[in-house]
Length: 180
Image (cartoon, rainbow, N blue to C red; front, top):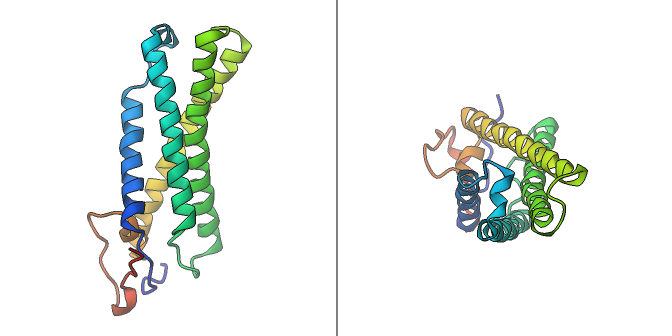
């Protein structure tokens, strides 16, 4: 078991709002996903999808930038290197997939708007879009599983971002340091 008496910094209120707010934006995007490519024939829907993809990317870049500049990780320096590498790989992979989903969607929308609506380029974009969605889901699952693993460890990582169901404190020197 990991040393639970190590102090872990808290993510700022802004970081928590960006994290949980982005989850809501992602869930909204999932709820609005298209069932059939042909739905893009509705130009109003196509425009909405394109604008939403751009807004999604802007929010993702803002969240990524803020997190990298403030508290890129709350894992302690004594965390095993394989845990630190896995954490970094999952986080960067999620950001990459979450960026590629709207980028491939914009490519699909652009082709549907003014280019060939079928063919190898469209098929390639559709396949890439699907791969990024599925890989993103896998990485999100890994991220959530790791969060629950840290909660079980009671190492403070869960408490640094999750505002509910706080993990039990183990030891007097396990108090978190607030960055905001």
